[in-house]
Image 1 (cartoon, rainbow, N blue to C red):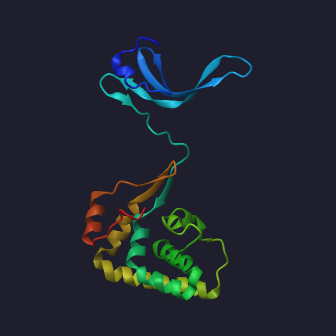
Image 2: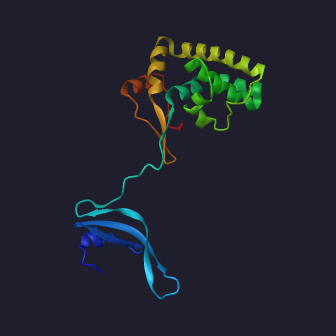
Image 3: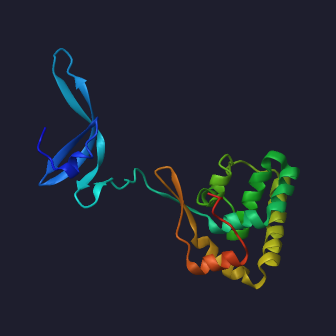
Length: 208
């Protein structure tokens, strides 16, 4: 075994090995495999575990982004779902399995003036209701339900937020849900958004 400093060796556990590059120490996981047809054994690396320094010890590698992050509008969609919960319950009673589709389409119509699969896929609604098919042909009662529910949502939101509603609709969409390597995060919340949210006692912490 190479003559490594004690502060390096203390991180070397069974199933790991150390690689030195230009005086810097790197720790890797590994296992041994016998070379077929011989008595020789080779070491197979199982991945990089981090860099070892005397000051900081083992520094784990930063997570790599394996695929493009997914960013979804979160703040406004989740607020409408919370404030208009009774509307959603009514749509589920009326349209049963299609109630979630009518509600999601109504929210998008309230926010954007229309609804389609692209807007749905860019919204937190697509995570809340992952099985909805926005390309399906709607029935006439469902289309009427969306038109009517959009108006009900607009009225409910106006009564709840009053003169703050334009500011809410400006600031709340600035908060996003971000998926990176299949892990879900909430984006940073501007302080002015946080203050407005707290004014109305809205809790977003448990809705990811």
